[in-house]
Image 1 (cartoon, rainbow, N blue to C red):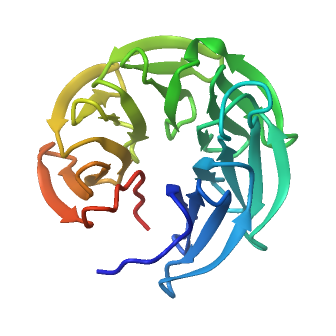
Image 2 (image 1 turned 30 degrees about the horizontal axis):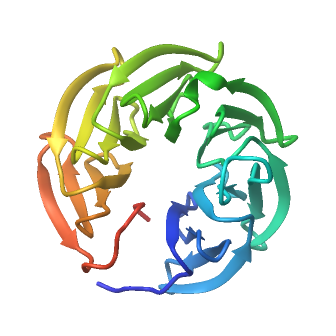
Length: 273
């Protein structure tokens, strides 16, 4: 339908609860573009930390959390999450969470933010911006998502080709599920019944029953699937190397639509506004 120019090397994308704004991290410019969905235009940009990747909006829609991934994981590398106020679209705080933060997800009550870092999963108190727990067994994690009931967090481990299921009350891994090769991102169905994981190195989406943590199906998609999001009826997947966005029917688990974006697009994230 249309193509809108954001910043340099856009990577992550997130929507406000009302769907009126999208926030896009531009890793090459170290800023975040603000997209007004009603106007269909970029209305401004917000300066954040170095090489931002993951982005998430608080459940109440008042804050945007940005993972300042930085150039490396060693001494002097980035350790921060930038916090943007959605009313002013300005950075109001910077939290130190761990080396090279990559992806993040907020709990349904908005009190906790889960951040994947080079040294593990950081559990951050959003009221104080302080790390309350750190799960070091998740040191090679990429994507992260929270179940709608807030009781479990799902973390993809790209090095082990697994999905970790974490109990949020005890901060313990309760299950590990074998998924596709080089899992990249994870999404949960709105009703909490299923979990979906993209396998970037074998072109699959693994479908998991959230009740028993068993694999229901593996859906073959286009080349190098990365981003994923789920609505009540459709699972949307961005295929990076194929420059396509695919629609999977959540009931039949069949690919029912495909939108080519152009050979140089290399999409890394997808949302439904």
